[in-house]
Image 1 (cartoon, rainbow, N blue to C red):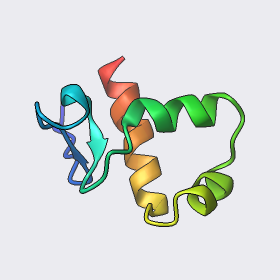
Image 2 (cartoon, helix red, strand yellow):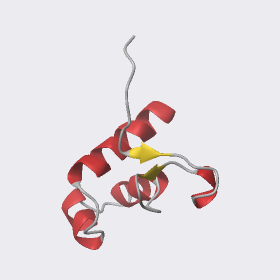
Image 3 (spheres, helix red, strand yellow):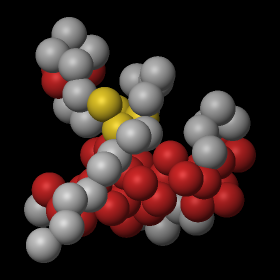
Image 4 (cartoon, rainbow, N blue to C red):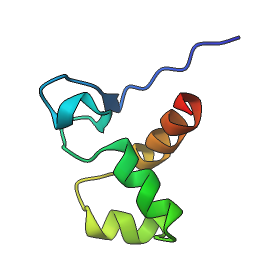
Length: 68
């Protein structure tokens, strides 16, 4: 079984209570998953959060899938 590296996802105890976040932001993996789950498209999410990149969103979704 291979190891998955998440270079865009960080967890720091004093930022957002230690929840996994997109690097350098307070955007949590859970928020991204929740938005996508509620029907928000990736394009709309990127428009709402212009400092995010498509790879950030995709890696957050992969991180949530592995953590589940």
